Length: 161
Image (cartoon, rainbow, N blue to C red; front, side):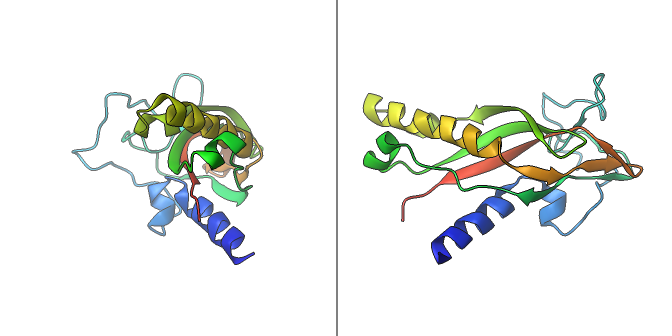
């Protein structure tokens, strides 16, 4: 039971929302000048979606989503036999009601494995990460007190103990 709690805590803190981890609840008004990746998008974009962790400034009055429910990802039998350990980055959209939409892997477990058997086993973790993330629920992000859709990346970790 303690291992399960540790994993859940790890998942909770694996969310790559840097302002949350730094103890801030509102977004900084300007990003560090050296952090403006090629994929930077305005906040909000043309679809009204806010983007966390893109290096683009978030507007003043924006509050990032908070994870309120998560599930432990399950190893596939193939990944367990291959003793796969991996961090998988999943990009999600958190809807204004806190549901997850459009989860997609942007950093695969397979990225670190070269052998065909290990690579195929690692890819099963990607599927299991998506299954787990679909069950997450968030307190939605808000702008000026109103819930808004937010795109952000989260990390799902698979560790053998």
